[in-house]
Amino acid sequence: MNYTETISYMYDKLPMFTRIGEAAIKKDLTNTLALCQALGQPQEAFKTIHIAGTNGKGSVSHLLASILQSTGLKVGLYTSPHLLDFRERMRVNGQVIPESSVIKFIAENQTNIENIAPSFFELTVAMAFDFFRNEKVDIAVIETGLGGRLDSTNIILPELSIITNISFDHQNLLGNTLPEIAFEKAGIIKEGIPVVIGKSSPETAPVFIEKAKACHSNITFAEPSFPVINYNYQEGMLHINYQNGDEQIHISSVLAGLYQIENIATVLTAVKQLNAINIPISDAATIEGIKEVKKNTGFLGRWEIIRQNPLIICDVAHNEAGLKAIFDQLKSIPHAHLHFVYGMVKDKDIEKALQLLPREATYYFTQPQLPRALDYLSLHEYATNKGLQGNAYPNIAEACAAALVRQKPDNILLISGSIFVVAEALEYFQNMKMYQTN
Image 1 (cartoon, rainbow, N blue to C red):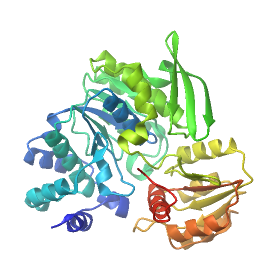
Image 2: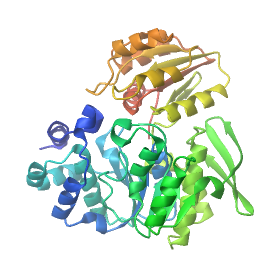
Image 3: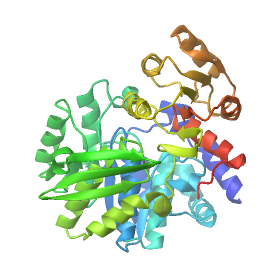
Image 4: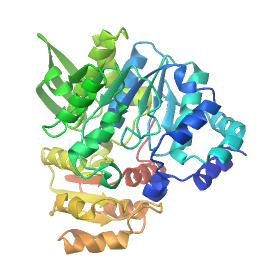
């Protein structure tokens, strides 16, 4: 098989959560363990950092990988899902896995794939571990998919565990209360391994403290470790001053969503813990790594500015906490009118999502091209009944094109609601020569 045939084999043969939803989830580690055993336990060949959380785990993963690269280490990075190219899921020092490596892995392991019958995610986890071993990485940053306790990535013994935050998402899989969701995420805490908690609440903190105590793991909370002194957002850059003991540390971030203030505090706390366990990282490497994260790791889709005038922003926010963060930031940016290209997947809480959306915006209701998508006509009907004004478009390209026609210099165009909506929007803007991702 060539690369296109190989990817088609993976998509067609293996159950894929991003396409079909809950039916693709295997609620145990059996298949991943079997695959990695057949591969000779590749995950044991390098150091790891394990990251879970409801929101922010992708940002924290990329930021931490970029910082580690800035120290001169060879760094693996495993994240999901991808935006434009399957190979984005596994990178070494920012470079995606070569097509030839994907082809070779599937060809050499096809018998095991047929016998074990893993999900798409289980297979990609094993592929990433094998790739990182072959590349002889010094350390790999591993982002969980869903949850933590039963996530396929949870077969590693990391140097550090990180849980970014807990909010409502995937309740059908993780639980209907914040403590229940926190319990699943806390499943990545390992015996004797330190853990950093990004943002907690009175409901979730006791869950993490109890799990860390049971595992004899040192637990550190980021919020009191690096409190924010002040911040400002200027011309697409976020500038933040944190208190660092008796000193201050100034951070400039091209990841300009205000929600990154919390993520960066989590990263700074993680860096401090890595220094404590003899993985040395200087302040200079930390500052440089955060500033250059997009260049170093190819990170996309978080407060992604396509154009400044009029302002066009893509953001993968899709749950209550993520959408609230976006709307709070939009309020701080002067604009005459908001145009909003919006689509959802059908296993999200549509009632809660639509209640969050600003009533004064003009909407372009649409859908990504995957079976799990919420039908654009159904979305339009739901939204109209909630008092939202706009039209329906069968695909992201048509919705973006319609929105662009109506843009004025003092407007904002936002594309959000799902990572898959943003993925197709970025592809559209690339094809229109409006945006370059590298």
